[in-house]
Length: 207
Image 1: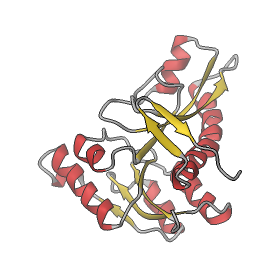
Image 2: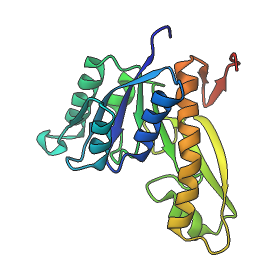
Image 3: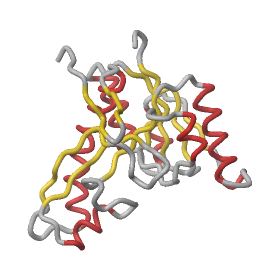
């Protein structure tokens, strides 16, 4: 892309991953621009963080729509209105419906705090601890119609240490997320990702 890649970020919570992406754009030369931040939670702290970075941010109330399909169509409308190239889920706690997936096929990315396909869903860290694994990690993947089932872009491991609780393990996972998510977004924006069935091929670049 000759112009910076236009990102639309969907959030529900504190927005630490969203802010980390913004910092990577501002300070580390990522050729991308966050053109809109959309929250499904009115008082999400992510909206405050977006404001600090001068980002266009909007709250879209799910209760104002008759069903999920109507809500997702409104999200698609806002994303398309802002010319979004890549949709970034950053702590977005709603299931993404077929309207959104269809409109942005292989252009929606999510980050998950486990090594998919192990421990999908909203409790990946707790599930890994409960299962007793010695290694967990972080996955960045494209989003499809399933729950954390889309083609995997990048993964990295995080050891589970003796005495870990959910908070300690999650903190170390966050450190990997803050490195891995910008890397995956950068690869997309450099047009270096090719989806081939379930596989994502990473093309060689100048680096």
